[in-house]
Length: 539
Image 1: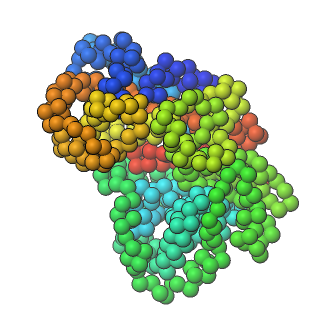
Image 2: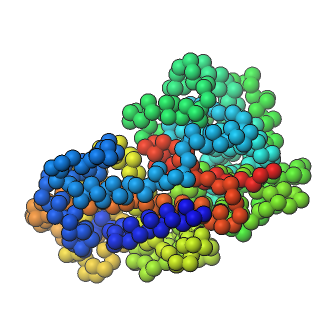
Image 3: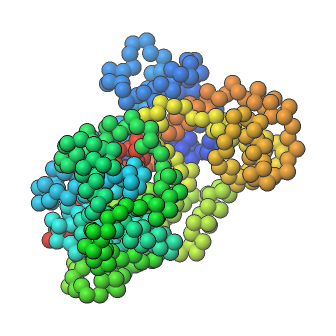
């Protein structure tokens, strides 16, 4: 526990001078003069004295530098120092954060059997396939080793993980989701999958569908994690989201003629896969929910899992795992949780939120009845530690993907900040400007951006093209500073995520869960929310 506390202290101490920077919003870059107010003078002077390409190279290509960098004569000493100190505190450098190979070694010592699987993009997007492959393999392996009886997939959504655990690993799975539409889709999707599963699995094995061809594809997946996906890093298609799958009808998605294999899987899914619409919180009675779904069973040693559980749901899962101790009917024996959507967390000690933050909090927690999701540990609670909404939004910035792409922010970020200047000029109550959520706009010029944004926001403002051209001319020289400011914030983003995850890990230790581990499960370029918490109670 001391190691976790020390890391939290190191991160928060380093972050303190930059809190105004991570608490800010890029929309206000010009209107609030963020460059002059929030960037330390030494970094500001250095960035203004050299080319923007040289500065951004320090942020984008730092991982390729050795410890001897900066070289003699470098003009980016202060910026390099900032980046190096920040990255030294990332979870990837935390001594207690495991990589997959280290987890596999531990799992071998726990007596876990190999339950690895290679999926195909036929079932889901490359990103989702990668996440489900790893998570399902870990859950299935530990399920058998720790004498578990049922898997509870919290926030299971469309049933990606649940269906694979049931169909491939033959586990009893209860999927829980608060959305009835998700529950319905998950059930229908799994019914379609079961009819095609055996045939498609054979075709994957024979290389008929899988893009991961090769005679060694069956090799131990976890131990070969890096080699299996490194080749995929260069495939730009892997960075696409699930859009292609969302546009497919279920009948087309699983249109594989494999009727000869239907009977076995229909039997398996009918008995083992259950889907329930249920809002999970820290007070949920897991045993009653599982009993109702599997009335013929009498022992309930549960695996509590969740693949990208949003906001407070991740915190609730940890609390449920701690509270559901050994009883005659069983216990919550295994936890495999990967959280996301940190901006949806409610805080125990919130500061004074902006108008925009208040509206979002009101919208996401209308009843204001849910227990806070951060902080969880008594250590941070004793400090009444808080994170702003903007900093929690920032924590989701995909720094590895940005570095891999070696790209600066798009023009849209610059256009949005300029648009805020126009709003301040033309909207009477300028304090309300931050309420305007423009979102993504496709455009080729700033003029096009302004008129599309006004139309999207239904604002009847008289803004001439001449005024638009003038403001673009006046502020264009500051675009480089905006890009540097953006990259400074992105460099600090993983520290916010580290605070949240280390706080959760420490909470488990403080509550007597000695076997708790933080693991980097996924490729961070493909799946930016790549860290999971794995904990268990021994038999």
